[in-house]
Structures are given as C-alpha cells and as structure tokens.
Image 1 (spheres, one colour):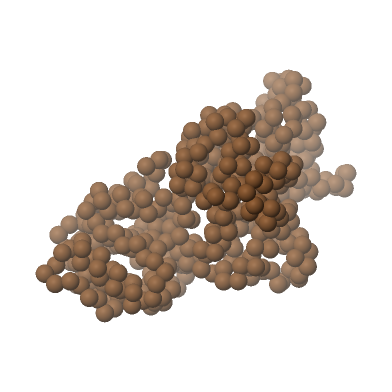
Image 2: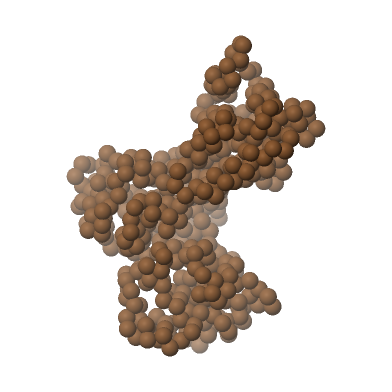
Length: 482
C-alpha cells in the first residue's frame, strides 16, 4: 500500500472504536484510486466482511450477498434473504461480540436497483433500535459514483447525520505521483502527471508497471501506453464517462468536455463552441461537476466570472490529443505519427494549463507559509483590469490570506510559464498588476509577494532582482517537487 497512511488511520480508528452501538461510515472517491484494495485490507486485518456489489437486479444482488455471508459465517443453514432489511440485521449481528468492519462496496449499484435501500439502512441504525444498540458493527458504504455519494449524507437524505466517518480517497498529488512512478526528474514527472494524473491503477494495472526511464524515453512511453490501441489506457477516458450513472446520453457531455479541452473555459465560450445558448448547457455542466469530472474555478478578482477545467488529466488528454484523430489512432502503427504532429497542441492545451494548476496546488498545500507571507485561505486565479492602461491581465496564481481586518490580504500573485525562461519583464508585469489590485481596493496589497513559476528556469537579471528584493520569489521545478 502506497501513501494511504491517513486513510488507513481513519479507517482503523473508526473500526476499532469500542463504544457500544453499530455505526455507519461512508468511503468515496473516483475509480482506480485503491478504495477496494484499502477496504479489503481493512476487513482482512480485522476479520471483517466485504461484499462488492455489481450492476444487477435487486433479486440477484440479494442472492449474491446471501451466498457471500453464508460463506463468511458458515451458519447451520444457508442464508436466503428476502429483503434488505433482513440483510442489514444479519450484518449488524456480526458485531455482537466485538467491533467488526462490514463493507458494502459500490453501494450506488444496489441503491439504483432499490432506491429504498438508504432508508432501510437509516431505519436499521435508529438509536433506540435493539439490533443497533446490541451491535458494534462498523458498516462502511463505499462508492465511486461521486454524484450519488455526495448526496448520500447531504440535505434531507435519509442517512443525513447518521455517519461517523465520511472518508474521501483522493488522487495522489504531483509529488506523490512522481514517487509512485519512480520518477526523479521533475520535468519528466510533470509531463507524465499532465497525462495520467495521480491515479495509482494507471501505473500498476493499466501500464503494467511501464514507467518512462528518462526524458528521452517520454515520447516512446506515450506511444507504447496511452496511444497504443492494445493498452488498457487507450480507451480509459471513454470508459470513465460511461461508468458515471448520471451521464445517460454522453454525446452532449463529451462535447462540453471537448470545448473545455479546446480552451473554452467559460460558460459563454462553451456555448459558442457548441453553438447553443448558455442556458442550454447549464444542466450538463452541473452534472459533470457533480460527477467530479469538471471543476469550477471562481475568479478571485471578479465576482460571478467562473471558469471551468477538466478534473481528470487523462480525459483532458483524450479530448485534446486523441479524440480529434481517433480513427487514425485505432490503426496499428499510427501512434508515433500522431504524437509527432501533436507536440505543439500538447504543450499549449495540456502542459501549460496543467503546470498552472500544479503551481496553485503547490501554493495551497505545499508552500511554506513564511515564503508566502502567511497561511493561505484560498488560492485561485483571475483577471485584473488596469484602468490606467485599459488592459486586462490574467493572473495565474493568486494567494488570498485570512482576513484580520476589513480587507483580506493578497499574500502573493504569480505568473506560471511552462516553457519560457522568465526574466525581468515578467516581474514588471506582476508589479503592475499588484498596483492595479491595490487601486481596486478589494484586497490589502501592502505585503503582497510576487512569485514567478517556471518550468524552463530564470535568467540572470531576475535572479539579481530577487537577491535585491524581499518581495520576489522564484519557484522552479525542483522547488515544486522538493
């Protein structure tokens, strides 16, 4: 198990809690992140019961869990459950003598076949119910359909307020992903992460352990894995959409994602790309957000001006590089020719935006607060209008601090360039933007620091300016992966 110490500790604390009464936990996360591996390991370590649901009718699922529980308990006569209320009571009975984990994996499959199932679980876990009070079963419901799992404990849902654990198994970040892929070169690590992200299964199962040996092997690695029709990674992006239960007619959803991959990050841009009204694409955008496939990023300088980005790097890569030439890629031997012709598109549509997002993630989760001038409350990006020049300036990284007075402090603003060697002109631009933000009056810019992020390095003049100033920070690939 790689870097799941936090999740393992959370599960261990929940499972080993010796207090009387059955308790409920919820575990969610996108597919291929290792949830099943984690939960099976927890059940094995604690002698628990694991049941993995499949897409099936309610009657078939009842037969399957009857057989599974019979094999686990080995009662005098086999179980033949007629309904889920009987199943839940039998699962609660497993914990009469000690705390024991009971896992129902892919719970959304069961709930789709029987929408009353969450209410049945709620009824079984009523505080004054004898079966619950006499049990110490730690019931864990797990699922990969984020839209469903996100609503399981929300609002007026039956299980609202019933769970003692709500665990999200996240992707590996860019630093952990580099370790997982055994990549020590930060430039190579960033390029690999821009394609496959931090999903563990993509290395071990899908690429069968194939990791690029160095920068000179990267192009070959792309063609022999992601662009190879015989590789499991080749069609993975398509399958990710097909597996989402709320995406019934995928045509419009695919088009929305394609428009974002083309650089149309606003509602208006997507609507123009699709030749539709903005109101017509509101529903698919919301569904893709709920499914965790599309992220909304609010402009930190302008209200009600959100932009959108594709959450899964492999889907972004598919739409930008693979989907436009899919027919060619399906023919054996076409991968190298397609990849050679896609270099510029890969750099501008994939690597550049991905590098900017990694810089924002680094500022929020990894950067020393002393380097930024304080602890970030929020990190985003946005557009600043300069009334003196009547120009709009895009800010790649904006670090907002915790407000102690009337205005929150703007701790830092930054510019991120993947392939450009940064110089004094970039620094002058950031100073101009800082002055414009100060004049707008929304943020306190008295201590704002200027950060230059570069994947290609910095020239001598900007190094000299950094040495002579306390408000300038240079962050290259070594710092991002430190």
